[in-house]
Image (cartoon, rainbow, N blue to C red; front, top):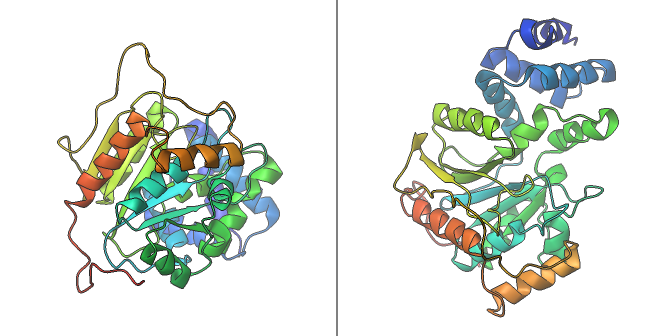
Length: 319
């Protein structure tokens, strides 16, 4: 079924394009995810949206369609979701450290993302070096939580059509709305996830803040490290908390300003084995937890304490 009528609306350039409403965006993304479009239409969609940018209603419709096609993830109690889609290029990727520190506190942590990305060091590669197995279904996720481990599930297992849409970037060289949706995706029942949402460009941070408000989300929004949902270990970024879409100044963290005078001891290389060895040193107490990441952990724990337990479910996780 053709999507040419949608492309006609969104493909008129930055000034002339019209945004779709939520239902139209849902229908468009559903057709794309279900493979009902040609390669030519898919490329036109990706380029048009890259030029136009996503509206809030379009993001909601796209997210509706993607969430509907994810495997359902049960949440015995509120979980923390860490979308990991960028990896490391210059700094060590410490998303696995954040996930493991939270898991040590008994928090159910779901990490989803790509397994491999040329030129980057992914969270999946570091967790593998640390001996943390990947999950392929909901049962494996629950098993990891029962062992007080973070659960990592690759996108192709969580939502195969989303993984295929993400791979379009390797063909045309441009991001598309799938990359934004992946970073706000929480495949749980509404209200049962605290999403850690990150942005790279400050102007996009406000767009995401408006999205979190409109969707009544529980979330921690911050400028991530190279696109990862973890605080920069060298300097504390602003961390803004949302509960049911409302900003929570009392739970949020202010950014550290001024010139850096002290740097934490970080590995000189950012490859997976070196990063894994560093993380093991932090977890064993041989290395200090970088102060910004410790603040992020504390912020998340304090925010989780404000969330109600999932109705009708137990606090206990399966062993």
